[in-house]
Image (cartoon, rainbow over all chains, first blue to last red; front, side):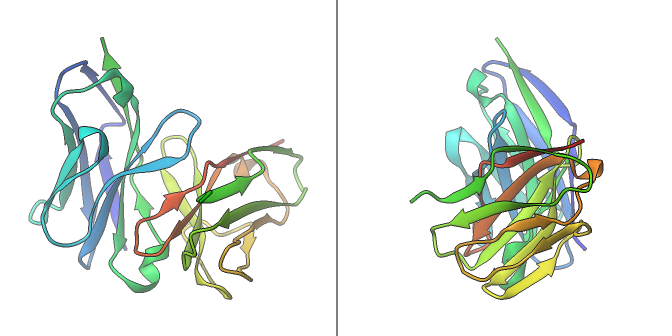
Length: 116
Length: 110
């Protein structure tokens, strides 16, 4: 069985500061890893994903994440926070291939607040 | 492309009533899924489908039925609504493991 743990249900940063949202996963097979963002009263939008290959992946809006197999982590970072980054962020994992494409396991979510 | 669409956007039900949440996608994706979102619990998989005519249960399937007669549509049926089913429901579709989500249906069961 897979699981995802997001450390910190709420993270608060100042505008211009580094954003770091933590995600650890467990999976018995090589995982696909995702970060999604949800703005208030909206659906989920894909920020970035790791499937295979380069372990540092870049996404939209200046976000990036690094897959670290030895640490079973996939932390999300952004060098400089913007007010528009305030949202809820979800880390998710699935198995590679086949029927697993229909199944994502999500973390509990982290609400990011950005202060002026 | 409209992507993934869901109807209705908001619904109020009384305990014991039944209803169907509609989901459609126009991207010709094989895989479709239903999730519910509850505060502090992330999204949890209810049912999913790997193609027309093939469905399977997810993490929280009790009280819900699905069917997939076409590639485009994947309706979710609540058989007898309960207050515990008050939630926001998201439909998603995928062809390569990346899931694309609809805007959601907010359901309140009284």
